[in-house]
Length: 411
Image 1 (cartoon, rainbow, N blue to C red):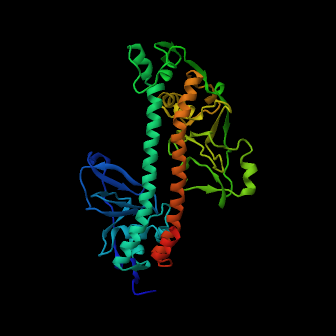
Image 2 (image 1 turned 30 degrees about the vertical axis):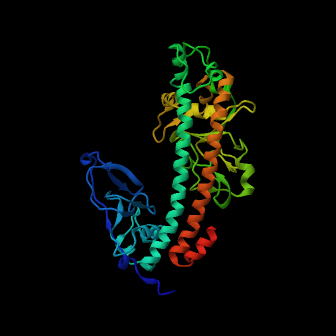
Image 3 (image 1 turned 180 degrees about the horizontal axis):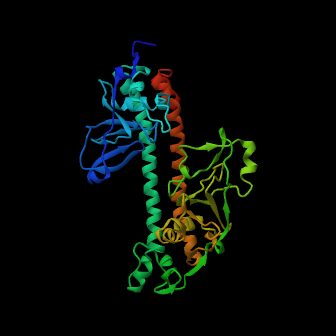
């Protein structure tokens, strides 16, 4: 180990302190982040710690580490760095991500990280200039991931806004009723919208549009397995509820199954690009499109809608499922259980959906398909960068890999 690195106890380099109590009754809305063991959970009007800061879980969620740019309030389920002792905060943030916090937890029914034990951990820390170089390198990767995710949020918002305008607020129909040309729409598209409304099972809908059960408009609806396979280091992805964000899939943390288990766990259905996966128990009403080239199988409490092969309009149906009217329908049909709530999957095929003319469904699908193609490509790129960062991080932090070598690997 070169002179750029120092060996000592963690407590020699930083001081950790327990977060602060803040009863719910005393919380007042403001701009100060409240940081719990699972991250920023709310905002308050008073700061207890001046930022930037680094926070990790003490109880509850153990092992996650958060960097906070501004002043903040760390809650009592956390430990935060009270004194960086001259070290770079961003580097310490990355450094703590490599610590096995469970090794320093109390042996209790509900494990909690013991700060005193953690301070005794033997660590190796580089000099401040090297810290800053490492933090800058890893920060660039994080910035790339953030940019890709922000771009995806914008693209998805555009697609959702278009669906809402056409099929929830019915803006083109209202414009034609008032004798106006629908805004930003060519004549051929405007001609596909009627100029009035009529009553239906879903309330007022554009004249001539139909209301049908889901099962009449798709190829099939399939349930996932009701068990969990043995975990593998590599292989197909076993989709879980944790992989659904609400409107997309997140592969930051995945469970794999052995390739030789593939046939068994796809006996009911093999997910393919354009299928719509959704959660029907515990976490309800989350939907996501299966991206291209995704080798996966359904996990517990997940089901799948397969659009028709020809003019299936998977993007149209996906957007209808995540839109407010259908989400309200799901809430209405939620079965409230003693332990978890659920959507009765046998009833799902009978749920009513709005069916515009085929030309309009196809047009919407063709309009948003390029947006979702870009979203899926960005997701894949973000996943690649995430894996790369997570592979390089512990080696950089420990000194096993030097920065020039890491930069060469990136290149």
